Image 1 (tube, rainbow, N blue to C red):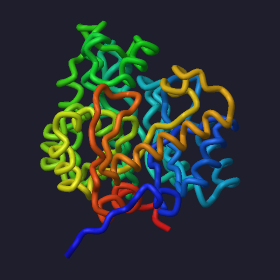
Image 2 (image 1 turned 60 degrees about the vertical axis):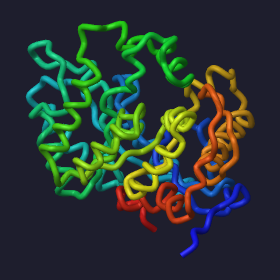
Image 3 (image 1 turned 30 degrees about the vertical axis):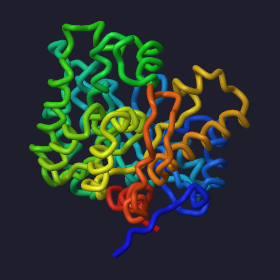
Length: 348
């Protein structure tokens, strides 16, 4: 049977899901309005980064957006790590997650501060395999809720800035030096971070898990393939890591395309779009119209990469590469049906 393909003209008529954005202020409705024009639904992901932006505040804002844009916005929740060493942290966290799930949360996110910042009562760094998280994982399995895990960081962060492979990482870690692990050789290595995540999956085969940002294995599709082979309960989103696929496509176009076709059921489209993103800051974009157009161009370039076969050059990647010209069946999975499968609450 002959394959059929989408074109650039199909972009704004095909229903799509961006399964990883961060909308936190009223200003961010510019992304929602552009998403409506570009035929996207959005999974708005809460993330606990510091006590200054609480899970409750993020969830309440998501629910406000859902009230205003019910056909476009859904959300994933998170939980606070404040008071982690207190005796009541576990019970408070479970109560909060039960409430969030009852309010419509489609996922629960954990962030890289687990493994990189969070410490126990012995002043030791805490990994995701710590027993303190066991009851949370059990709750997610009982409630059929997906764990979205940003665990570890791009391998680039263990390199000097000038040796990083894509511009997005150079910009981010220049702006966020506390996560530039090259500067902190005494902290756990890249391999230790990935090993802890892998152990989480091995210990919990019934946990449905989406590895954010290509599962922090963005640097090599072959390494990511090994994990997907080992852990059938794992999928990954592409948020802010499509440039890494493009970087690999400069020298290994066929390998990248074969990987996506082989693992077409395990890959979710996402961008990590947010008003404070590194690329928006670097370009000095402040006006709603500018940021809306930026979102449109990001979404459009990605569509071109996955559906077209033209030679491309993009801001974050050195060199040129061709679009992957993926069949419609694969594009539909990446852009919609995989998100609906791995986050069942997204199904209409």
